[in-house]
Amino acid sequence: MEHFVVSARKYRPQTFKDVVGQQAITNTLLNAIQNDHLAQALLFTGPRGVGKTTCARILAKMINGGNETSEEDFAFNIFELDAASNNSVDDIRSLTDQVRIPPQVGKYKVYIIDEVHMLSQSAFNAFLKTLEEPPKHCIFILATTEKHKIIPTILSRCQIFDFKRITVKDAKDYLKYIAKEQDINAEDDALHIIAQKADGAMRDALSIFDRVVSFSGKNLTRQAVTENLNVLDYETYFTSTDLILDNKIPELLIQFNDTLSKGFDGHHYIAGLASHFRDLLVSKTPQTIDLLEVGEQTKAKYLEQAKKASQEFLLQGINLANDCDLKYKTSKNQRLLVELSLMQLASITFDGEKKNSKHYIIPPSYFKNKGITPIPVTLPKNTLNVSIEEKAIEVTQHSQLVSENVLVNEPAKLILKSDLKRTSGLSLSSIKAKKEHLIKQMDVIVNEEDLPKEDFTEEQLIESWHTFTKKLQAEGKYNLASILSIDTPKVSGTTVHLEFPNSTNKVELERQQYDLLAFIRKELNNFDINLSITVNEEKEKQYAYTAKEKFEKLKEKNPNIDTLRKTFDLDI
Image (spheres, rainbow, N blue to C red):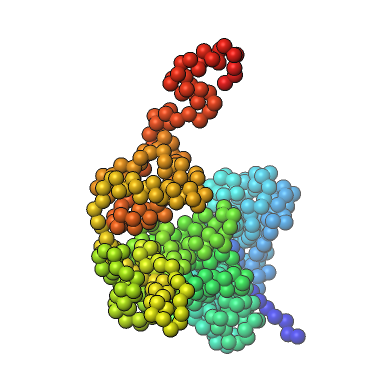
């Protein structure tokens, strides 16, 4: 088997022109050499894999008067020291002893100290004097990824060069060059994903490139890269966004489940979705398209999808996804958190009914009859006075019996509800019952403006109120019946006012108010009736709950009770 050399070593730059993404630093070093203006102590700092050691080696060759492409390192008195394993005072003292000896060949002795931040405090101090006043034949090049760990007295003696992260574009272009050198057919999007995954480190990008080439061979595709690196493909987010824009919550939840089943993390998915919305947002304006760091094919898809999504949707979507991202780590049910966020996202553009909350979610009933368009039906005024047979005919005329699948509305259920009677299949009553059953199965959207609104008196309201209270008692709901008996309802227009002694009564009635309102509205034939409940804590004092309170109430009515208690020495 032939010896394999990794790309990071095989394609290590040999000249400053080959160094990727550090043009400002390489130009500065070239000018310093040409103008004989090079400092004797240099510090190269920056993230891993961006070219610090490489630039140090190239510089060491050039300052000895040789050309950049020479491979004879030994001829130029270049000494490399790994401070991670040679970090003691003795190692530095040995180095300073060698510094005194002039070079046998060449003009300078160059000492490259890598990972210099690993030196101990005492080693730094031992190195200070030599670094401040080195012999004329010595140049020190220090390299580190953690400049903040170097003591200030060392930093002040060095000329500092800050290496930056390699941009995605520069990394992709260099990978394209290497793919061409190795005769590999690589898709632009595939190289772009590798460059993004490298996170600004060219060495990491080359390592990932070697790994993916081993997986896919000479044909490097986007799909092969995403499978090998286990990253979510752009297509996942394009599909998710299409489902969100189309309000398809069931399909969206299934897609999220499939994503989890492939081993991806929900946090990774929702964070990526927020980034996708951001990319769509910058795609909507020509001036910001340059902020889109994707391949040309993917950029075209972004531009196409950006036309479908409004700016308001994208801003709200980013806010929801980012909120989910922030809450994810502290959530006890992380999957549910993401699913709720996805349902809210898919409900942003839904206009099927009035939304009164930013956390609105499309109800499941909307998807019950998927693909059926709701048919609005306007019922006539005084519907309750029309017989069930006439309602069946009216609804049939309006809907033309196109489908039995129409959205449901609670008032419609209330108006059309009727008990089916067992009748002969050939009788007229059987036909009526079938029509009645048909209406029950139909979900009707009712125009609320046409619901009955007949006038009523306070006496009529109180009578229907007592009727409902008796109905509750017959059903065994004594608690709610007693709450309704606390105060006599008072009417102002179509608003029924109640006053309770504590908030507990108010909360309990508000939970059960829908059945109450449905009954009263039907009894009084007025669907504008609503409740207004207030709490008067002073009223609490009017009610006796404990034994002592009951005794005090009785004593107020008849003072002789207290005399009776004292006479027989009774306890309260």
